[in-house]
Amino acid sequence: MLDKIKQNTADKQDVAQQIDDLRKRLYDLEKKIKEEKLPVIITIDGWSASGKGSQIAQLIKCLDPRFYKVMSFGKPNEVEKRKPWLWRYACAMPMQGNFLFLDRSWYRDTANAYLYDEIDKSEMRKRLDDINVFERQLSDDGYLIVKFFLHITEKEQKKRFKKLTSSDVTSWRIDEHDLYNLKKREKFTKYYEEMISKTHTPSGVWNVIGADDKTHAKLDMLRILVEAIEGRLEAKAEGKSFVPRYEFPFAQVHPEAFEMAATQKVSEVALDKSLSDEEYEQKLEKYQNKLFKLQNLCYQKKIPVIICYEGWDAAGKGGNIRRVANALDPRGYEVEPIAAPDKYELARHYLYRFWIRLENDGHFTIFDRTWYGRVMVEPIENITPPDRVEQAYQEINEFEKLLMQWGAIVIKFWINIDKQEQLKRFTLRQNTPEKQWKITDEDWRNREKWDTYEKYIDKMIEKTSTKAAPWTIIEGNDKKYARIKAMKTIIDAIEAKIEN
Image (cartoon, rainbow, N blue to C red):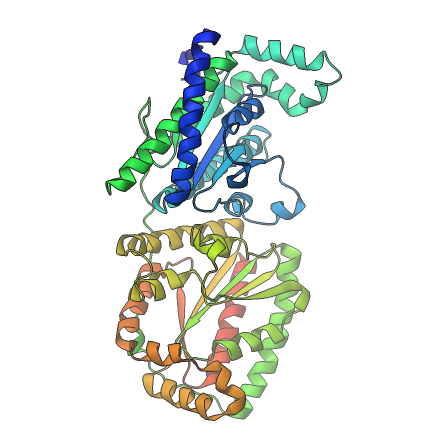
């Protein structure tokens, strides 16, 4: 593939006018993407010394620096190594109406890890699958991804290395990785060709640029970027989907079919289970002591634990979380209460605010409400279009799979109470001054939509209770029973992980 890429040369005088015209078009488009809230990600990968940095400098020349960001990703630091491998890229998502230029992207981590024998071929291909999922999720959410690979010949690469190393001013730009890139060029070529062929999709079209001639490469990149933005804006105005122009066949990529666990409707769950005060106190002490010991093992083995709490209003999530947290070393967990997204979160992919809240491996992240608001609250309140809600079930399963590939234990609770118990708790809150802050007009309004919520809850559990990350429905009419069941479920999940 790469050996067939044309290395065009440019008449600099003739091309200069074309470049100037394209820059004017790009300048005008910047205002339009702001108005249309279109986020644009430009990834630039390629051979060492292929001109990635200088080409980014040319692309941003006419843009307002307030509305773009350039990020260069090197080797992951110690914090990044303790997160899911895509974490640092997910946290870099641009806001709607902004540009993000990536000097080497998520492809770099995969390439280097594989080519330096840090991961095997199987793991490398899993990462390429992860990338396809990541790019498709961004594209489905309205992001435009424009991917460039700068290809230079071996002769040109040697020439540039010689020029850079001959000067004290530029010699620092060639490091051991660059030299290895040239020395093992055949090995890198095979990987790059597989990488491009397996991740060339409608969501992330590869543009392989012959970059021996920097001026012609500049022209090609500007043209492709401008045409991609214009095409996306035009398609959006007409309510159509858009695929940028491409030169070779797309990879055959199919959404994963997840193995699902058996489920039941929440209305069919018996809620008559309870514990006496004496049983509760005995079990609470026993399980809290056990959980404390398991937390230490998780830290030693660098196992992340992610606990997700969902449930009816007044179901007792807060009290349940408090009993779990009281068992843990406070240095090793974080409770993340999730409210309505702020304007910065709303301007990004809906999973962004959960990516940024993930704790390091070996730590617990406890979510009081989660990404499942996407398929419960948002469709009921008409916040999200129905087609995006339907896509979210698959996206959530994919997100949780990525967390588990990282090594995480994902535990999901739905705390279930009946309508009569909710009314009892609402009334108690309303009539108790120190508890009145817990009850709002929105809670009463949501109660009127009980049947509608029940329908979406059942669908959520059915479509996202995978065998790897099943839902546990907690019988919550008796708070004591609910707390003990949740704690025992967490203990069982951690023990099962450690034994494996």
